[in-house]
Image (cartoon, rainbow, N blue to C red):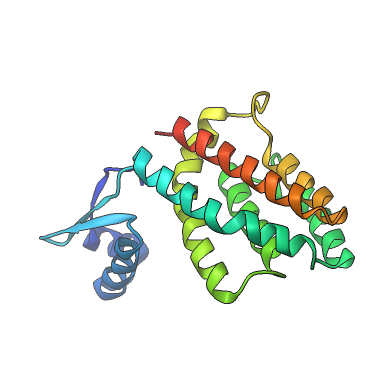
Length: 191
């Protein structure tokens, strides 16, 4: 659904073939995440994308991810790096769609940070990553298949793996910051 699009809760329940109650509960969760706004009369509107939202998400990610990445770099085992590196080619186009790629990239980041992250870190980051994904989907569509100006997600992953293999916490931190800056720039393309 597109930002600003209005829909009926009963319509969604009908499309999914389920009762209204679980749809209402799921939509309450989405509303709590700021992804939609419910209205009287049992309808809802997909939350619009705005620059303030993107900037807020990026600011919070910059407070958490670079330091976790630097710490995880020093803790990640070689076998785990081998496994993650082997996965990289299968989670990027043309093997998968942009949407699948973005979700796989989120999972990759979670696995990369896991050695230094608490469960709370990962819960908060997952919400931020999912929020950022709303901006990155249309941004990736604007970039298309040419990554001439940007570092592709695949290359970003390879850069992080290289920093981890070198046990270079400063480079892992700096690469994460570069990636977050690029995510913000690409997210703005989708606004």
